[in-house]
Length: 145
Image (cartoon, rainbow, N blue to C red):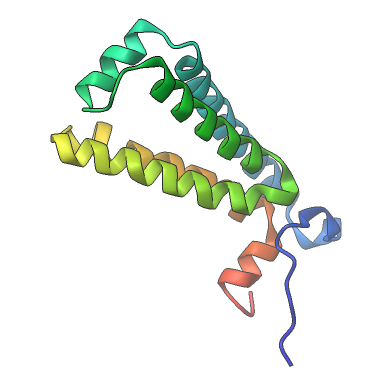
C-alpha cells in the first residue's frame, strides 16, 4: 500500500520532528525571498521608468499593460509561496517564472553569474527555505529520510 504525504500541511508535524534552528533559518530565508519578489512585482505594477528601460534592454515590450501583467503574475506566485498551505505550488510557479528570466538573460548574452543565474539563486533560496521548514517535503523528495 502506498501512503500519501501531505506536503501542504507543515503545521501538522509535531514540534519534535523539525529542528528549531532549521525552522527559523527556513523562515528567514523564505522571508527574504518573499520581500525581494514582492518588491520586484510592485515596481512592475507602478511601473517605474527604470523598469521600462530595463525591460526594453531585455527585449520585452515596455507598455504598461505588459509590465503590470508581469507584476501581477509574480505577485500571485509569491503570495501562493508565502501562504504555508500553498507554498509548494507557489515555489513551482516561481520556478517557472524565474526560468523565463534565466532564458531571457541567456538569450541576450547577459553576464552568467551576476545576471543569467540570478533567477537560479532566487529559486534555490525559495526551495531551500521549504526544505528547511517542511519535513514532509524532505520525506517526499528523499523517501526514508
